[in-house]
Length: 363
Ligand SMILES: [Mg+2]
Image (cartoon, rainbow, N blue to C red; front, side, top):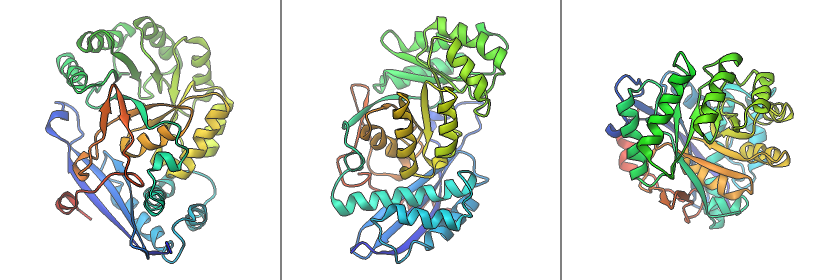
């Protein structure tokens, strides 16, 4: 019997590890909303959402805690029923906002519990297309970094075994300036390493086409978020006029916005954010929508969960390695030949470091 007996939510603030701290970059902590779901048969599912801005984390945790109590007494394996209850309680009129993000840790915890109840790793439970997925590293390659730091960061990630790297751009006044930053990373990384660019929605359409053409010449793998995600026509125009793939989607909440984005042919690669999507259940549905359009899928941060989701599906393309949660887990993801390997343990297959959770708990 997998009846849910208890749902608890904690807030953790973890320091950014020294090797990732870049002068001039403001991120000094990561915050986690950690949900635990305990069932009558002694299983504990865990789920979490990660933020690098502290302000909204406590209200998010409060919403998660309050919604979570509605699950007590329900069957943990009936995830769609559990979600429907949470969505109704959140005044569900469509995807969006904090309700989606607050449901996300609970949804992940339900899937972790299901995997543990059935004794299967999540990637297999969700589809089992492969047991690993190609990875790219994207931490500490910020647009605010001076060139020498950018080069050192690229070298560091290559030394760790990454064969694909992503840097953020969008703040140089001319295309040549943006290209120069890409060249620094390409040269520091060496031959055989591929580079992609995230423009963090920094450009208007005119800038995006000029920068996109220059970056295309520089040989990047994808151009992410060149303009606002709300500018579907602009994105679609870029997708038509550039030869490199346009990647976008991390700011979208769930099925409906993705459907519109895919219908507009605005993305060549769909990036799905687990928290904004509302957890694993809607994430998988968005991925299926993309599959129907022949669009490959990548995950936005949270590699501990995305390694499973992207390994589960046929159109899983790349997992983003961003180690924001390393300090709260005992388990480390394994990188083999440029691929992150899905943990083989049941559920997420990662074990919390309870002493660390104790140390970093702030709510
Ligand atoms: Mg991005």
